[in-house]
Length: 565
Image (cartoon, rainbow, N blue to C red):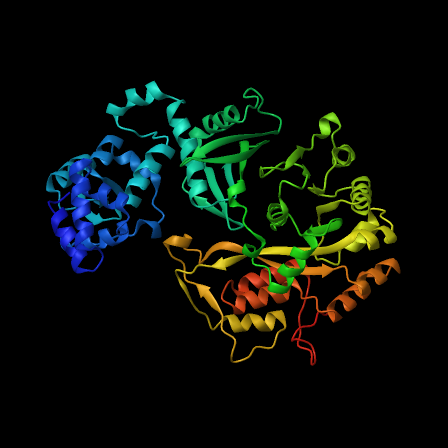
């Protein structure tokens, strides 16, 4: 570092980023633990590496480059040896003609710039970068790139490590990156000439710089070893699971491999842990829905359904409900395919159709285990539906899921499964339907006047009081404008009026009219309300509108909404 560390410290104090006491603490850490300035700053947490980079840039009079805003090609690592990059704290960001723009921790190190000039045989244009992000870029680039064009002096090391340590490190880097960006799935997709690495974040696939296609076979083989799959089998689909630790936290992975015309396609699902399950109040339900749902799960018997498509957060809602009532005086048992989250005090059973343990057969056996609460992962067939409803009628609280577009759709679906109307009438406590919409990033949100145009698309009258926000995109949200997701809900409670209609085998439309008269609010209404609250955008609500085939229009005497066919 430029002896420069004192200049930087003083500049940070003048910018009100550090106090004198913190400066003293940093100096002591550097001396006692023999750390360099950048490492001490990162570990202290007193100031962000981004702010340090800006101060360095002002002192050095070199530009500051936020590398998170650029798609840096990791193959640039082939232009300089890894050892040189790590020793100098430098990485080539862009190479255009005879000029190499190099991100550096210390651009005033003239000896380093001379060495870089000899390595690249080009003019060097140094820029200042966030030290932490630059080190992560260096580690990621040399881990994920196979380095077909490595220097001769590194060839011997590559041969010694061939297809073992580099592949292991690349898989680890892919997994760690997935955890850090809170991805739900990781896709390793071979194409004809390229290997695509994609992460599903907040429900949307995002493409990231990945390894070279030459590493594909090694990556898949490594994943098979981790999941105890047959490494010699490449022509049949295989499924497995494994666990690894990241920063001391165990992460469960569900692995699926399927052969394609370009090679084996690997998809990994990152499963939540018990520590990620919160309370019902954290799910984002409207107050009236939260209160009614909480009352339902505290009933001694009956059946509650959560409906929605795959990836709509049904499992999280069910686990949160179980977590709320999970006490030592209750025997809670689950039947799942697969078991996604392991919870203490709960007996969880994995369905295994190949040995005859289906949802229906497992549910029969579970009833002999003296359960108080039963969770059936999904009702897929007539037999399971009938046993689940019968269990609710015989003194058990049953929670399960159905694939329907809305809450009311659960009733005709149960009829399709052959469950008698009188059984539905007596067993049903309620049905909650849900979807997930993306949250606006709180770091880059701004008031968006164009959102009012989407009100017309949704068929809603806008008012001057309406205010909507959107996200511009920033490093914290990976330039998407969104960070995290929140649920939108509708709840059908089995009131006296609804029960009478079910016993009369009324149609879904008739049940809908009574439910609306009794005050049931639709998912679309909840989504619009969350957009008004600044939690999401109307663009996300429009996507929701497309999936549930609802149109809302203004109606006098209603609370502002009415569904129309």
